[in-house]
Image (cartoon, rainbow, N blue to C red; front, top):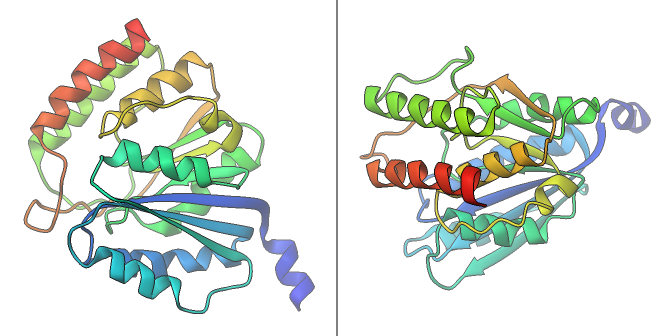
Length: 246
């Protein structure tokens, strides 16, 4: 029976980078939901980076780390002493990844980990270097802010114009990379601008980029959503910076 289980697992080591900041209500549930990946892949690494949380987030992470886990799942934990931003946390996590494929996973519950096996499949099939999970390609999604949708659509269009690729969702969290591609990007951004930076740099590297539809369970600001219109303005600047001047 064990031999049969091994044959159906995807034969790759998967690393998930999970940047966390003040997500005490969701982080433990999210980490528990990721455990199923040990049944899907021969080896899984969860790289959790607490970005200077000031609530009970770090205690919730430690409680999860102390629990029994599948033998083929390892955990790596790093703590930033002060909040530096999603980009800084991602860079730290990427350094600690040892898998052949790296996936970015937010610590909230807006994205469904059950989409991850499909997200990485084009890489396993040898046809993609990078895969974006698009919230706008037909998957189920919560209906929320109209102007957020307009902003995402505009920023993606602008990014596509300068990078000459045809993404539908540049700002998505769910991105999967062949590890050597991601580690070769030399990322610099500390905040949400890292999404723009990644896209510009994989386009310039002529990486093979695919998109798949994913589900999306967005939050309201009352429920903890953090990105604001200021980050949208910053993204506009970063699109010009990383496509034209870097």
